[in-house]
Amino acid sequence: MQKQTSTKESLVFEKPKIPEKMYEGTLKEIKPISEGKYGARVVFVYEVIADGKEVEIGHIAYDPENVTQGTKFGKVLIAHGLEIDGSVVETDKIVGTKANVWVEDYEYESEEEREIEGKKVIVKEKKLASGISKVTKIEEVKTEQVN
Image (cartoon, rainbow, N blue to C red; front, side):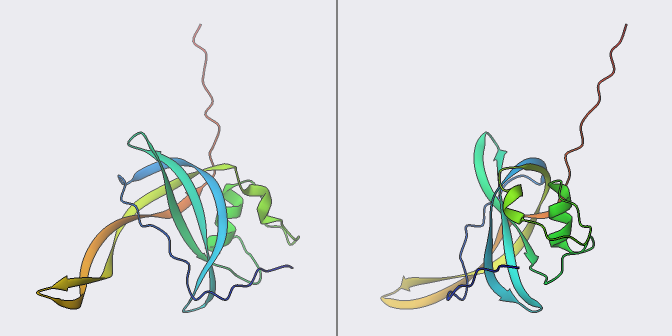
């Protein structure tokens, strides 16, 4: 198994705000981000069309040593057509493929340095952003012909 390492503590990515709903998303990349409480994490970066614009939005998952059907990581692989059957899988194969991504809002606290009355202060604000809560397989829709 090959893993990429990084000297960075965290990779910063934008936190877009788009309407909550299901989108068809194209997986653009899988990249490591900061460690979480339970270990290494990755972000699956998807491109969706929201309000007529291309938007990149992330789905964060732990990067398990062994991927199973029950892990977030495994569910993403399954949504993109890979099988979790005890074999070694190449995750690069799914970059560029599509899946349904379920977008929900979440609240986060941002810190920003500002100058107020000649003094530099850190201002904390609660903001709303969107994230992917679930990734599922795009099922083919069968259309019935009416005679």
